[in-house]
Length: 318
Image (cartoon, rainbow, N blue to C red; front, side, top):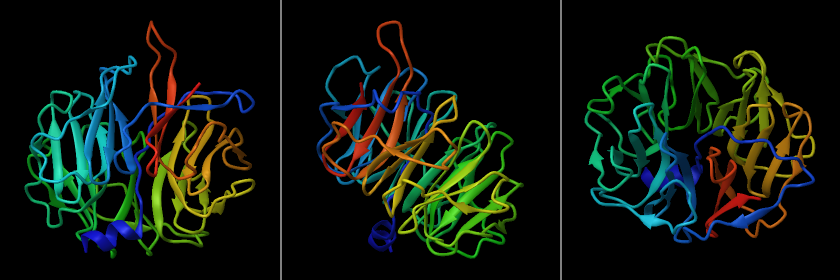
């Protein structure tokens, strides 16, 4: 089940990104990590950057000051890391093919945080405004933790799919789950009950979900490109004009409402809420973009967008 669920989909996490004009966009290598596919990235409140790889675990750059990536896997039982989230307290959680692990010291030491999980293959993690954690598993549906991962409870009433690939939560706490073949489900009750929201969604293998700052919801699929919904999933429309890619692995948006996607054919950007897309691949030597992240601006450096690739490490915009 582990290998099958991961082979069925590549999941990436969603993080806000900064605005850069189409004509000015180019990428340069972030000098690693080159070991494995970069399935997930995150930035904690201190500015540390985390990259999760398939087969080589977690790498960290502290505050992205030009230093090298450092492998930080102490305490992990596996080095297959598919999703990363940081909560408001600065604790980092990673989802792997063998459970969930947490760290309070920038990845120097990881602690198993998987108690209560009925399935330890984790495709996606999400955290809501109250700090409640959600985990999408490769065989046990969705699980919830209200105590920072100390205990997990399955929350699958009305959710018929056991393989859940993606999660997204809006500012109000409404949670969405993307499944491998059954489409998208929504809960207003932190997972206590779910309802199907698939009207207009013609491809139901949902690899990634994300909101933009205007409240529009986007769904990246395996083989069907991108879909968008302006009304919380009540109705979906294709959003593939100019998007020359079949599978969308990562979605992110900036404060101006620009949308960025990582696909099987590079990275694309839209300033029209997905109505049209422009390729932003100058300098990107690997066309498979699995994850996106942002490094906030600091006194010494501007903000930067990071793209994690399928085997060529991370790239940053310049």
